[in-house]
Amino acid sequence: MKHVHHPQRLSFGAVLIALVVATAALAQTGQISQVENRGVQKRMALMNINNTALGTLTDMMGGRAFFDKARARAARRSLISATGDIPSVFRKQHTDPLSRARPEVWLHWRDFKDHAKAAQRAARRLDIDSLPDLRQTLPSLISACLQCHRSYRKPM
Ligand code: HEC
Image (cartoon, rainbow, N blue to C red; front, side, top):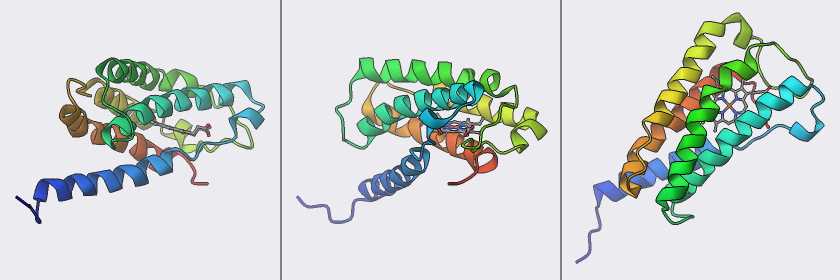
C-alpha cells in the first residue's frame, strides 16, 4: 500500500529541514585556536562542548547515526552540565577581537542568565528513551540555543 500523502512524514521532513538550517547556523564556530584571551577561549570551548553533544543527538534524529541510548544519555548529561556552566564562563566581560559575544550579554545579564537556564531546562527535558522521544524533545533545546544566539551573539 502506498501512502502518497503522509502528513506525519511531511511534518517530520519539515522538522528535519529546520534542524539542518538550525545546526548549520550553530556550527559556524569562531576561530578558537586564534583567540588570545583565555576567558574567551574558555567560553568558546564550552559552547563547542554543547555543539558536539547536540551534534550527536541531531545525527541520530536525522538518521546520520544509529540511535544509541548510551550515547544519547551521555550527550544529554553533557548538555545539562555545559548549559549549566554558561553563566560562570560569561560572568566576566573578557574580550577578544575574534569574540562574537555582544556587549548586551553584560548589559542584560539577568536576561542572559535566563536564556542559559531555559537551555538547561530544555536539556533536562530531553527524553532519550527512544528515537521518537528524542525527536519530540530535541527541537526545543535547539531553539533555546538559537534564541540566545539571536540576542547575544553577533552573526558572522
Ligand atoms: C545564554 C546564551 C547562550 C546559550 C543558551 C547558548 N549559547 Fe552558544 N554562544 C553564546 C554566545 C554569546 C556565543 C559567542 C561567544 C564568543 O564569541 O565570545 C556563543 C557561541 C557559540 C558557538 C561558537 C563557539 C566558537 O568556537 O566560536 C557555538 C558552536 C555555540 N555557541 C553553540 C551552542 C549550542 C549548541 C547551544 C545549545 C545547546 C548554545 N550554544 C547555547 C550564547 C549562548
